[in-house]
Length: 246
Image (tube, rainbow, N blue to C red; front, top):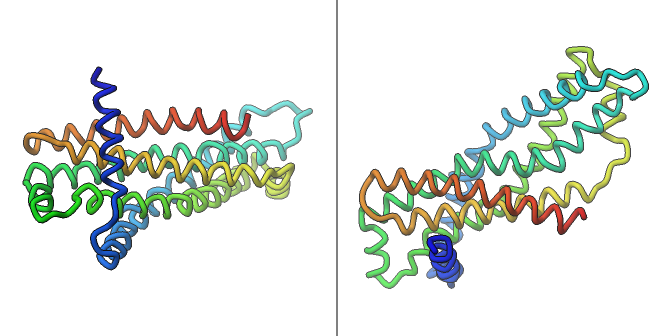
């Protein structure tokens, strides 16, 4: 029953979030501010993780493909498809669910327990839309760019790891990442990036918005936001894969 309760309240919350903004100028300023706080601040961690994961994927594939009948360029092909299809969209979004999701839930939760949200409601402002909608728009716009950046850095990390260790010759790896390339894989990952960004911001905003109690409950709301967002990302990853690739 708790699941149905939260699902219904989340649906009502979304209706409030997507209400008409109070003032468009303020709304645009909030979006720019949230782009910096949620998206641009995540560039560093996404770049570092993508580089090393691309390197690890390449080396693990190389160490497990030792048969002489299998050409070495298949290592580049396998690394490319792993990065494009799963890593850059799903794994990066799971990382953002921890970093961005906890930030959103703790920020809004703190505003709730310190009664700042109550002040907005008394002033006649749609507090759900005012606080959450700019975050949704900001991450939905920026997450696809983070995913594209992750793809490029991940493949570069794989190429560098293969070349430096001598496991995969540079020419073979480059041929592999070009071989039988399917452009729709990139589109598929970008669609997932948009959906996952929406889930992260709305779910985290929901748990923060309905925080009750004090600072201890703010921490609990942040934890719930990260856990629920991660589970929903994995669930929708399965659904979108079945819908788009089946």
